[in-house]
Image (cartoon, rainbow, N blue to C red; front, side, top):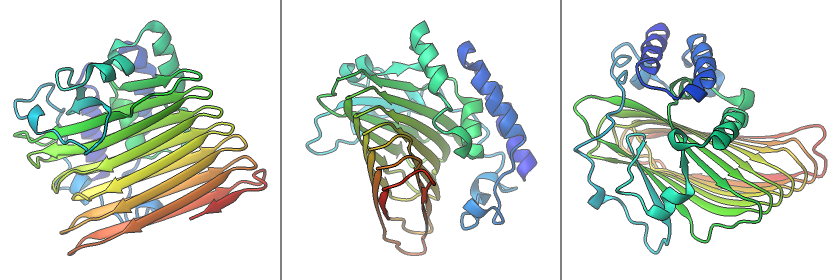
Length: 341
């Protein structure tokens, strides 16, 4: 099972076009993924979550197809509207930004990796993977190996986004199952402030595997309010990772919603790197039918005088299954820490 899953997805990473300036990251990801092992029930962080729907003998070849670059099944008119949310909307369909369905203000703010200037390419290559560090798992490595585009958001020093940025990731129903590997990089400079909403949806309840990685760095005295809403339907397999670095006196307020799919795994890792930072992490998960949802959160207090407040709630319906694993790690130098879970 392990060898076939890795072999087929490695072949998929080599089948598409990639950006030459991301080749070093692709190669590192491919090398790491080639030597990885698919987690089993004997793997500590995955022992309650079976990957059989993704990597089992009957399913291993099912998702080894690239997402269609365009889809006749995408219906922009039926995109969700969050009541009373005045926001810049960016629409990403099957991993590709849809210019026609996106607001021009959002297109002006974000930078697609494929459109990055030489200076922006240098920023992106310097930051990608650095926030994850050694804390990633094989799906992060697969994302590194597969990445050929992504979204880069940079908020400059002393700047504040007047309205939220709303990123709507949509997956369509196609004749064949497919995989997407999407990436988001967010950098807030000193005293910057922003609100970002990530929403994951599908149209038509199709069969696909979504592997998303968000890397976020919140600079000195900067503030990020972040919502991650997983609203996909039954047949989707969703693996998401959110890695956040907090600098001196930085603030992160996060809310994560999981409505459950056949398989959902969300990792949230927050690093207090310098003194004085604060995070509030809240989440709700509500699976139904035979859905499986797994939240793993980790807050690392590496510096003194930092605070964390984390609250997660779960409601399980029908024959669904939910796993929550919350960890707070207070390092020896992190004196005067206040952390609650």
